[in-house]
Image 1 (cartoon, helix red, strand yellow):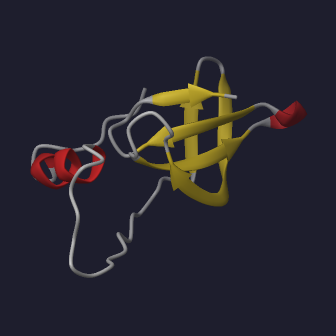
Image 2 (cartoon, helix red, strand yellow):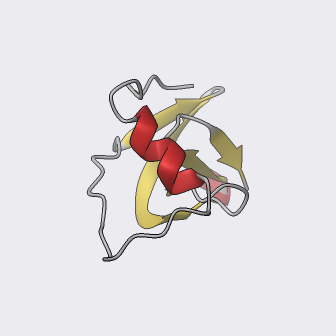
Length: 82
């Protein structure tokens, strides 16, 4: 697991992820995702795909290791394996 500082952005993340908040305009978060994530005994490299986690709408980025293994890293630090 990687450490992401969320204390400063927690109120924003809570509002984004609640699924009920509506904004009068559209906005985009520019997130500096790490290039490499180490999970278990493997290194996963950023693919450039970004999206949102289905369950809670949290911004996420896709990473891939050798042999096609993939995972998604959420802005909250949670890792979901494909």
